Length: 93
Image 1 (spheres, one colour):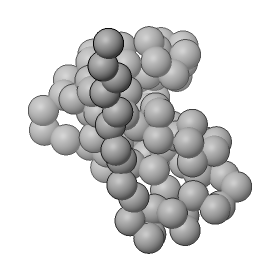
Image 2 (cartoon, rainbow, N blue to C red):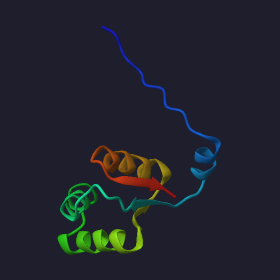
Image 3 (cartoon, helix red, strand yellow):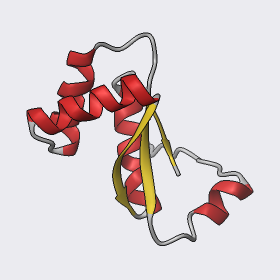
């Protein structure tokens, strides 16, 4: 039985930023995803109500980005990866 491990590397900026106590997950506007897909992802993965998810989608559309969640760096990284796997553009601040 073999075990595979995946090595993940971080930049100095990422390591230093992880020392902050509160990080924000930022959702960015793009020309690819529909409002419906963004709303679905906000409800499915971040547990927002439909009306909250619609407000987020509109803010992303009109302002170019929206902070959708706050927490630890590790937690925000997990959600960033989930949203990116759904085709959304997200970063941790």
